[in-house]
Image (cartoon, rainbow, N blue to C red; front, side, top):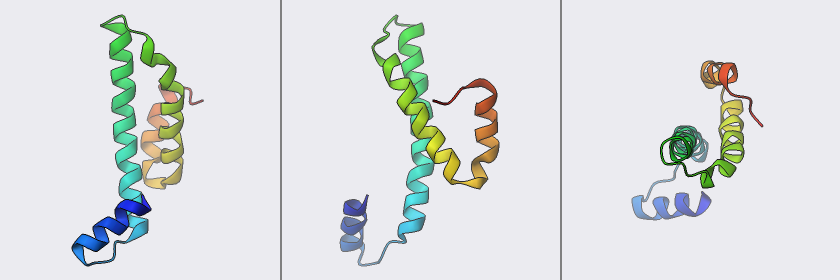
Length: 87
């Protein structure tokens, strides 16, 4: 992440707020990881391909780690906890 922040700073000539960048990055990761889990499940349920199922526990862990970081995501975390057991 630091590499990309430095590249951005070099191109823009401005200093990136690292805390805000990390927050946006983490929130994006939550969305993308949830999408990935859906894709993994789709592969199994529709295509009969169980290759990606092994990645679900780690991906759920990444989601949980990011949900735990931000109080404003507690509602989403509680919604997930109703249906998903985090590793």
